[in-house]
Length: 236
Image (cartoon, rainbow, N blue to C red; front, side):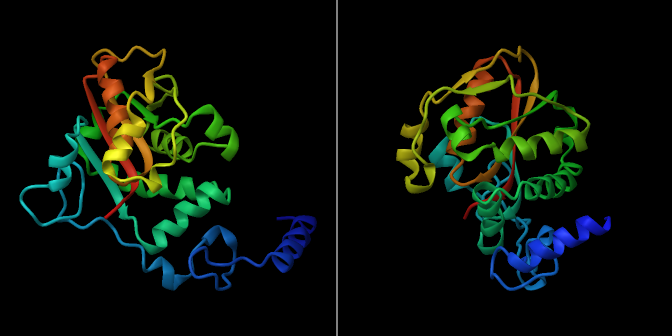
């Protein structure tokens, strides 16, 4: 870093001191995002979870799968969507800290290395945003994660597999039934031929799984042989 850049950084850090995105205490530099205490609060998905949807549970039967009838082959997540993880996702999506997406992708890649089925996927794609939502936010955080993950996995990333055709209300304020109704027919197949292909579908958070399930339905209807899902976080 040259002297001019160092001076500029010092001025920015003085005017806008870097803080932990979770507890807001001062930290050495903003690219760290979390203080040591909050970083230690990141919880990985426990070993006891549903092998289909990833829901954390020690029960033999998964009520989440029974309620939602998932069509994807398997959903894989890295972190539980609790305090520190929520802060990271929020700052990534709404404060424009895009480098968090790269960090999430790196953590997902470490998990993907141990998931043998993912070694055979043909394409990596992301859950698309409607063009209006994308224009409002300026970017799609799931695309940022998926591109980086595909690169690390040495797989082909595509944005031609899915299109978000309807502008839907935010899923965060809806219950499971309303989420399904909200997303019915929200997606359509893109221009990419998927017949016989295995697809890894990437999103930031798996909450009820409604969004990724509807997207997976569209991919399967377009001819995909199997759809796997991978998210940075999994809700409780």
